[in-house]
Amino acid sequence: MNASLTEIIPEDEFLELAQDHSRNFLKIHTFLLNERRAHTRKFYSHLVVESEEFESFLDDHCARDNKTWHFFCELVACIRNLAKAAFILGHILKRYHAYDFQGDESNHFLEDAQKVSIFIDDTIFSLFEEVKKEALRLGMTFPDGTLYEDSFGEYYPQKRLPYNINEEEESDARRVLAKLASQYLGVISKVEHFGWNNGKNHSDRLMCVVPVKVDEERSREVNALIHNLQSTYDHHIRRTPLEMQDENLKRFRSFISMPMHLLSIVNWLSHLYERHILTARREKGREGITFIVDGPKVLDVLVNFALFHANRYLQAGRNLACEFLGKYTEIDTCELRVPEKLGFHLRPASLIVKLARHYGTKLSLIVDGKEYDASNVLSITMAAGLIARKGYKTVLFEGDKRCLADLKLLSQCNYGEDDKGNPTAPPRELTHLWT
Image (tube, rainbow, N blue to C red; front, top):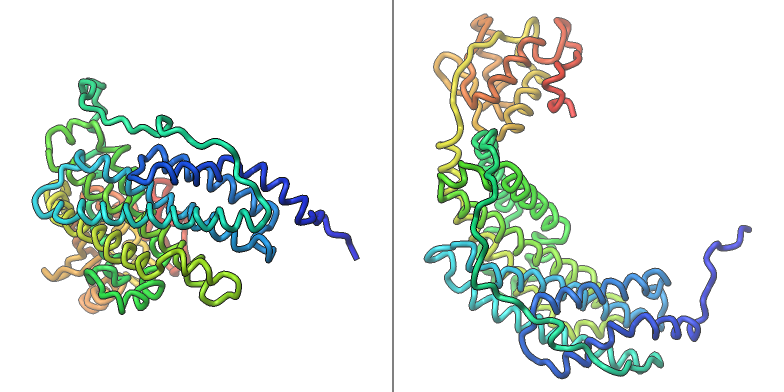
């Protein structure tokens, strides 16, 4: 039998290492005892760094798998998750005035956010109190000294430099904006598909929402989609003449940014609830977490604050997205030939659908004056039956000029197949359809 490549460290030897590596983390408890008030982003950033670093040390030594250290690890992990959520919420509150929300868009949000901030701070403090008890039980000693309040001062600028950076070329900003708006509506559809748009939930129904409808995996998926929207906006639209001309564009970015941050909070609290609270109820030796962290309140913050307001801001941005689609999509028509031999069967229909979804704008196949949705395979194949019966050799497509240009290239290669229906190599310009 091969010997293990990992050496087993005795618990008393590990205690000495843990004592040394926990020094900065444990000093935070003393600081919290002296500073029981709202904290700054700079403090939460420090808390995130120290808790992540200490948690990594514990994980490197497999402390979670040790009965003596397991509960201590859970406490540190819960603090890290709440610190992440607190930092994001602090960022939202500091930048809120810059989002230019109007009227009902701001109703109750700031009031709700302040209550959530207090709950998170109180929970972090309670966890640190338990950290101290557990550390003393393990035989650790608390370090002398504390952190200094001046280290975490928040600066609130009252002035800004003049906006005189060279503007980006408008280039493809108009082209990108139509796609961006369509993808934004796609995010809303995803949220609705998950059933996340049902408003606030009564406390006795929250456990039917998390993790049944809302979980860490889904929140991470939606948040990634929204993060991509913001990245696309910043790369292609920010600081362009188009942004300067259309005052609604900056507001639209706010309706991207706010849901992105709120869904990040959903993600971290989902992780906290699923990995550390829900499982604690099922595993012996971990029940203590549920007495320190108020699980029902975490669910309430997750669903009735973060998810609720994320959905509100997405819905508020829907009208702008629809407006941009109508304003910036250049519509045209073109007559293209029907695929030889087999017509619009599954393969060519699927490629047309990929093309339509790539641009994210409406594309229609028109036969005898009737429109068929070219972003839907079933709709195309329904039109294909009529085309075959009437023996049409060409059909009309209507949609975004960019999409039609690619569609012309697709038709020139017989929609990706030879006359026997075998797949063929695509033109180099259309390789995105095959990847």
